[in-house]
Image (cartoon, rainbow, N blue to C red; front, side, top):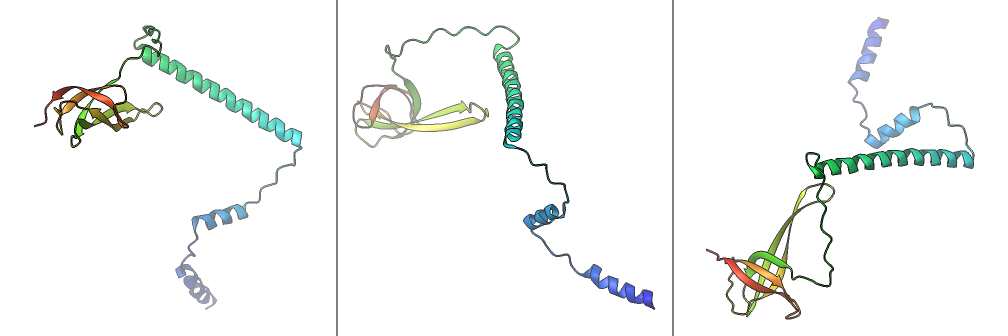
Length: 176
């Protein structure tokens, strides 16, 4: 009879739902249950020495990683082991050459002015993801020859108005 009473008492406990704890509370209870020995107290000098050793270890790791990256870049740029061609020295900035861009006309409402959208595609320096960006330029169109949707070539020029710094060179492709 005593055994039956114990079984009856055990069943309600098993059927009783476990209390739902948040992850934070669960972590707190796990930490509280730990019975680890506290670390031995260290002097300021000992702590500074440990910190310096850790910094030296990380610096060695960083140097090795950067060296590997440099070698990987060199081998990738050189292709099949051929030495990379030397780039000619850059021309001095004072000579200046007007920039040229190609874009699509998005507006031709204003007289002798068109708005051109220039799309740019480049890779992110670090991650290599292809980034697509666009910018709009106000372009001087003396003869009003470009219409919305046309593909045009524009060239940098002296300031023509407060926002216009470009001039139309040619209409490459007409819109359909």
